[in-house]
Length: 514
Image 1: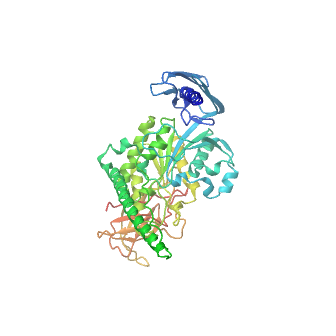
Image 2: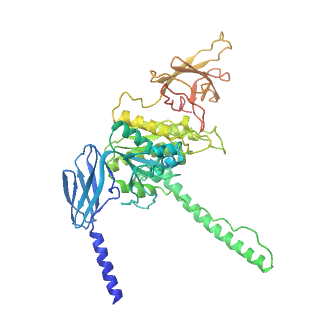
Image 3: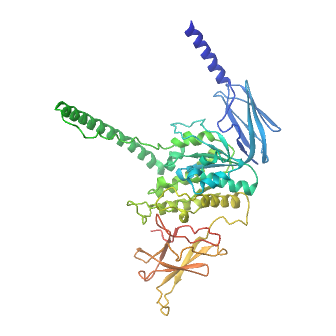
């Protein structure tokens, strides 16, 4: 009888729980809603249940579908720093407190976006001065999923000295610049995971949409196959090891051989993070996205270029808010590449180029960080320059601060500069490299202009001497009689630091397509 009573009670509780109106995971106390755009509000309830949503002067009603999902869309809201309640009513009532309206940005990518403020430069000062109750972050818990999820774990938190240490350093500092410039609340949806390749952040549908992306599935299939082979080999080695151990013990001998190491389980299944950490966010009202990722795809630059553009376009489609701004951070300098500790490799340079070419998409922008990297650390601590440069992009391109510079000078071509035999010492044939814009000048903080290389028709690049001259840079090398191509900062790690009068760096480039 007790078992029957327990079962009946549990069943009644389950039915009651299913009937509860439940908002989607992003709708919690302290949330930030996007201003000046339609605001989708959604969640679950009993199938067929009538649900009403009230925020400010707006009250909307809908009926939950057969799957229990319901959605309403509030009319655009003006910015408001005054805390308000968001009320959901069905068979139960949910009241969410301290809701504000302002700017919402999705921050995503791998470890350099995830990197907490506590591990950036000046963490003690940054924590001490973090008194911004209207800057708020929700961190999506690291989650993989084999199919698109609808919920995640995480909570909105205001930026205070007690909480900000674990905020994304780049995202928080970016949000702070926007908050100070716009004087509105700023919310950051932090969906990040270190060490992740881009294909994990893309939906399965997109990865199947282009034959060029088949390499992603093939690579994953091979990883799984190799793992199964390695597991079988490990089991056989383990049996042999156990037999040898037993035999030694039977002889009274000491057995010191270590057990065979188990093979590593494959990680980063394609689409797993999109399913677990992006899908539950759809279609939350956003102003745009900031992205810092690519280190895990270095060595596959051509593939990355296609994947990156497809990911941006698919996210925009999935959030159903048009071509929202998408700004990213180009890879910093780091000693990596074809050899251990090799700064002269070019796989990161090629990945940077793939990122740059993605600027062909509308409403995109990138910040250059080769000048603030750390040769010996893949996680440079100088996050404030990164955040401020992202903020420049957003303030100029998204919020209309036209007088604010948003990037450094960009390569605009070159022409031959003939040799000057009268010079002391005689100058070799050179190239005059031009940039745009030219109104903010060029400067090099270091004693010499570094990072340039030139090549002749043999396509062999040599380090070049360089000098700034009337808004351009003249480059040449005694080893190149007739230069026909120039590269700048085209290495994994580079001392290149050419910038404009504001300190905004020149992006890496190459004039050739070799």
